Amino acid sequence: MKIMLIIPPVSLEERYGKLKDAGTLYPPLGLAYIAAVAEKDGHEVRIVDSEAKGYSYVDIKKMIKQFKPGLVGMQTYCTNIQQCCKVAQMAKKIDKDTKVVLGGAQVTLFPAEYLKKKEIDFVVAGEGETAFSELISCLKDGKDLSLVGGIVWKKGKKTITNKKQELIHDLDSIPLPARHLFPMDSYHSSAQLRGRKTLNIMTSRGCPYRCAYCSGHINFGRSFRYFSTQHVIDEIKHMIKDFGIDGIQFYDETFTVNKKRVYELCDAMIANKIDLPWACFTRVNLVDEDLLRKMKGAGCYQIFFGIESGNQRLLDMIKKDITLEQARTAVKLCRKVGIESFCSFMLNLPSETVEESKKTVDFAMELDPDYVQFPITTPFPGTELYGLAKEHGSFITEDWSKFMSWDEVVFVSKDRSVDEIKLTVKKAYKRFYMRPTYAVRLIKRFSRLPPSKMLGLIKAGIKTTLL
Image (cartoon, rainbow, N blue to C red; front, side, top):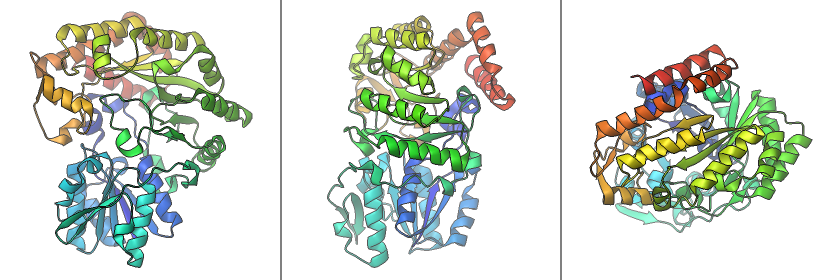
């Protein structure tokens, strides 16, 4: 079967807002794994990444006509669902027999709603590899679709919800992501990654924590599962050999959940002479000095911490399960061992007052990490935060495409306004990044960046602090 996996048109400006010039674009690992499974099953797979290549709907239409896929698949978020439906309509108009499959958190939450659309045939709910493999096998061989776990589909006018698909416990059984199908020269890392040719890799799935704003559990559940150390090493070597990478971004939701595993992976990277700088995401309560020193020795140069607030009341409300003191300790330890800290603080959380927003910015200044970001809170559908937002304020739009940008206000708490929130964020960036002492620090870092990355960071800084 010919399978076309499509990323619909979404610009960096839509995704990052004023920070687009400092933004990152990596190949989407979810679709890369789906493509790998389909190839392994013997199907012909074509990837159309409109974000990376800047394709228009006209371009996509031409490619569908030329390739003539039997199935079109797309990964959905609340922010791109409208674009996905438009591509689906286009595919059906070209050939009504083309099957359209949607996956991702958005349709997993509301499968019946999207199956009401005549252009959508199937929804893959949750983790997708096994369900997608079974689905395309059934379609190819004309087998009984009711036997496929993890899909929701239409039979006449009736919506059928099949049994749930079990999570994949042996992650090593999944083939390596089909990166060779993607336009690899069209992706880029952020300015903070020093302009290196950096690719993303996942070494685990799932996160046991229950942060109110997170939707990661919708696809991957809360049980922590990981690829074997040897599998990860083999994948890194493959990326070095085939794509010439000189930097790694670990894309795990929480990289240091299992400290023993991190020690093993770091030791393996050192033993295999994988001398590449790398960054990861984790929590402030899941690092200690010994672990950080081991990570530093294996190449870690930056850790992203989602601290989210400088108010313990709000941290407790969003079930972050950290303390302000743990945040202080983590950033201090990173500085001590020589790892950059990149901290994120959400502003405009439900029920957050003007004074609490100021306390969050004050806390960011106190911590003084290497980088910060102050995204405006976006309560995504399906998260507990979405319910808290409805309880403590109001949405100014239900247009989910507006939920994409980091600097778009979609929700306001009581007694606050859009203009006041935007001004608060602007002042926060200006206060942190426009300090003379920080400017000196930044100039030293700029000297290590290629000109294009340096210019991108300068543009982002001007837009967030001056415009």
